[in-house]
Length: 103
Image 1: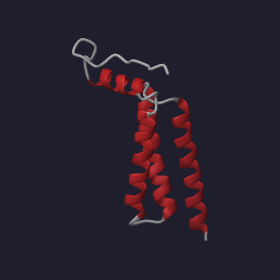
Image 2: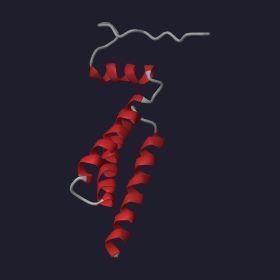
Image 3: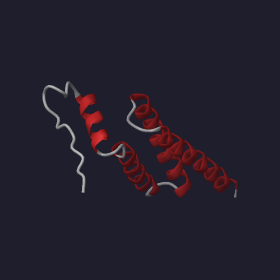
Image 4: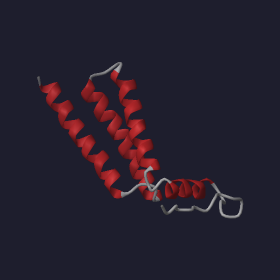
């Protein structure tokens, strides 16, 4: 069984928070920030669901995560498929909220 070794963060190769996040993203195989965004989506959805309808909670939480995913995509921390997934979720939520408000 082959093990992958990663360079540990030290003072010489970590000059700031950005370098540390690049290292975390590399060590996690690129799944750290997508999982953080999904967890944030769930937390925001549950928080908003206590006051508003499911459709409004879904579209609001997916929109907030879309904005964050775009920012993280510009910084190079998430892949484009993550941004597209949250954009699609926002569109689905908007259609759901529109249909729910029609009836």
